[in-house]
Image 1: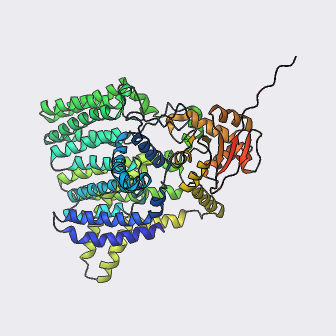
Image 2: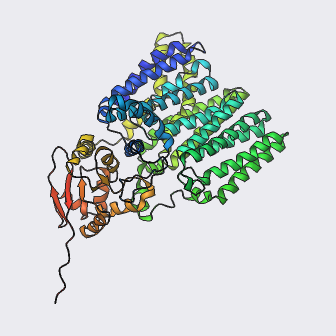
Image 3: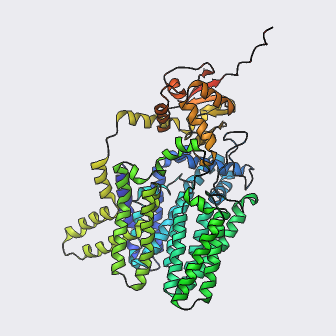
Length: 613
């Protein structure tokens, strides 16, 4: 079904885009038309989910809840989720920067449409804005690195790259789409012909990405290193480096003041913007700016580059960043790490995934890498510098994907310029053919190859295991459990703390008036470990944990992967017993209507009798 969707969208969008390739002024019209076609297609495909406000991921649920709480009066710097593990709440390390566009749309639309519809509009529109940003940046890179007429290839291929496109589809409101845009902006800033504007663009992208989260740090470091190396090789690049350092340093200071609570600005945090990451950036940039002014010859420029690197590394070690590089999750509760974090699928190395997932994830990045290497050989000297930048980012993204599967999404986006180059060069040869059948079917086959649609189909046919009936039923059951109406029906119970699954709890908070114990957020490892121990432990252990967290009800629904993990760890644990229909003495079943969720009330603890005479 997804493949048919991709091909249909590609055919329709290409018809819109193709006429606007000739004029340097008209290509923007073609880009906007292509984006509008994509928006209409994506909105139609997600219409039911938008109407129900059924968000695709627990992070999206919590993001919207964070925006809602802020607009309802929670402090700007107060990022705790007070309905997770109350009364203390759960510490969330996210940034208000991503909240701003969502909040702006909700504030404008709420008086006209009401709160629920306004949130649905914001959740549908904001990801499409990130999609336009990514498409525009890819078009600009393609115009600069391939040819002006090749602008449409990379944006169109993005619409075929389902992992990357999925991060910018309606309702995908968490920060991943913005981070893709940030990395593409950094890459474009490094290849822009206008050095000062390019450096400023790259610097702002570095600071914005760092303000959102630190998962793109390898790309940010690589981008700054490439700018410094470019200066060491070519003295004219001092303008780009100076602008990059000035804008990155200044914007990072602004981000620290604007988005980090005063008490945390000079603290150490591995997982968010803090002095740990800001000070090395400022120190390295200060040295490089001085070097860009004072250094004349090649040897002097290389010495200043080394001095800047040593300043950044030394400051990083002093600020505590060395420990973060060795183990960024060192502060996570050890039990939560063993039971949960080390088992998160997207955090596993790609080589630990199934062969189908691994090869499907690598197909487009490898195609893009091949295209980049071809262009590096064919391009003139200035073009080689641009393609060297693109290749470094592409190769780095593949290495990061091999280390952690979540990196494959960025690898898809960074592969697109190289894949676009293959498409553009191949199409030039095909359309020059004197045979109609070659010109027509050759272009179709070329597009299916460079977009990785055909390789992915082959991989799925050869490596994908057939879906079992039990697996299909489990997925359908889990989907029914996560419907907003099914969660809202739990409001028949008085507001209380509910003990449920980790992955379901953020949606529970968004769509009901209840509180929960924990969600999949690493700063709250102790609560995560308690939830997992209780579900997989015997009833006595579970009772102690549930009572300690002051939960009034225990709830479960369906047979998601999380529940299967509990049953494997504890065949006689609380979850397995409840599924078999066994009820513990401290739980009383509660009949619920209009929801597949099963509910048990936690009985008050038995009071000890009077002491014997």
